Length: 346
Image: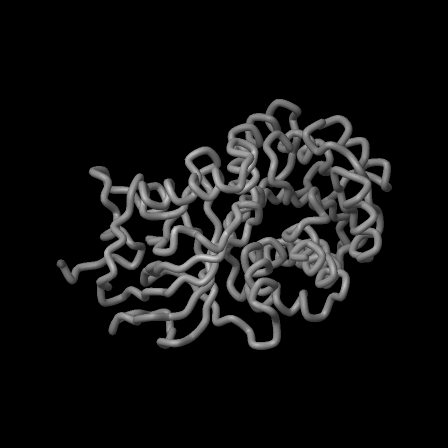
């Protein structure tokens, strides 16, 4: 085995073409580590919401969903839904650390990987026998490998494991929302912020982050009255509207009816087709942040051009320095966020 490795994980790519692990068709999953790698004994996977929704919609039965996940991982050496292109993340215990690893991890630490399963070499050894195929969180025994440029966070001692995993899965959303809101506040503005999917995990954290950083009016957009009631009870938004975010005119009008278009629109839904409405709901010169892996970025770019919308569109890539710490602190200090998360897990 060669000792030459690349911190991006290029040495684990088995494709003929030179591509990064996320774009690769298949990864090398051998247990033996290159000097800068870390092996994790996997305890639980957290499937990306868009991926799980697609798998559930296609296969329906939990056993069939479980079989589909096992087949993807066996074929590709990673968990990357071939339809959505997305994966998720995992938690586990550090099993071995290469002598040149820069991640600062130690054997025995329980960690959450903050990089996508779409680029993480993964082997499942228990057949997912403890999972019924009906939840995003997947009990699992196996191992995964982190590269020199991977990211992982030690799990906190004061929060239940499932709760920590749920937060860390979406921790990029509140951190980037906070950064964008801060930029408005530094210019003397208190932006109107609309969060599409405000009742979900990333959406509720984005609302809490916007409030914490000095946003003005907060609007939560949800698809059902049931979600609206939960979001109102959580107290995270000044206005909660129920509309189908896939209907661009309905979404535009629903946000406008709360007092005007949004300066910042954050898209946190796990269904496709919300790009046009998000753009129309945003004021001229405003910002749209896309966090959903169901987003078509070509549809967003061409849609904005087609309606002559002068908006800045950002791709939420899931990483902002300090994002895990920031999201966990929001959970600890905001009872509304914590209540929504605990309710979803229950």
